[in-house]
Image 1 (tube, helix red, strand yellow):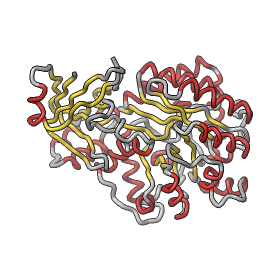
Image 2 (cartoon, rainbow, N blue to C red):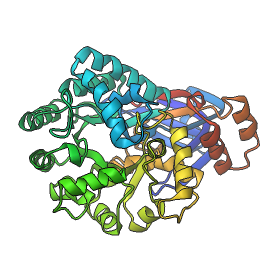
Image 3 (cartoon, rainbow, N blue to C red):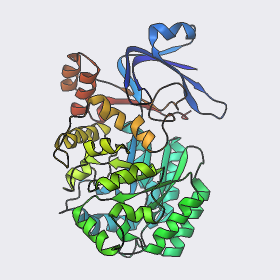
Length: 427
């Protein structure tokens, strides 16, 4: 049993913040080797239950759930900051040329190990990630995550058309490779597999149909892709799939819109699309830094809330500009106030934090497993220093409540705030 004493943040299953300025977190290891939360709450109330056990005490610090990144591209680690006029030129000039290198297993391994280390350094303990169209890229990332004992879901990108040599795959072989990777990795330790069409324009109808058949055959795997990110992309999809009601319905037509399906961006959805998202149990990965960087548009928070479909925050590295959840939460606050429909709203600090922890976990179908520190959750957490920089220290010392404390870290924080990242199964 490990006992921690510090400030403590966790959430109800509905996303309301629970905070103890002097908190206790008790972590016990299960027979299968997982470390799970045994108890969490107020120190004075819980401490008598654990009398005599050694305590790791962190005065002035905050223990919080590990962050969940709902959409990120590990092969784009070195594409961050590449200038482009918009999404499609960025893919053509930077992303596709760089992803060609991941046919090399050694190169894939080197990037994967850096990527996992960078996630953990920034306090991200669960991620839903894209690999490339090369099976070696999946093997490398799964192996790196397994070594770190991290919860990670990824998949081989499917793209058999409208893609250059070096990243374009062959329809039948791509589906065979996908099934082989599912059987090799899905459910191993803390790993999961995601069927991963890049986006509708780069997959033929045959490939999308095959992906949907795999999704039906393996209902507990994830599905991930992109939808309605950019107006040029939306027009392109309309030309390629003229019979589809909308961009989103393309995926539904092929059986790829369901629970455990996460679609990045979801900017240009209409009311019927939003109803469909909720009806199918699919979720949106909100990627504010990449949407701002590429000038794609704004996620419509208010309409998403009114429709009632699930969503969570994502860095979307490498169009996203930082691995840091603090940068993502700050961008989400800005996007929320602007709003695609000009009916913006002010997202609270606790809501922003929830979207990047328990809310994102729930969007993945992992609510109550990760992203929170209630009893029974896997004990992935971060130790945060609210005084990591002089300006942040000045601001947080003046905080009068939890919202002011969290918002100061959102606005002024970065990777320096993350003092330690603790993984459930790390030995």
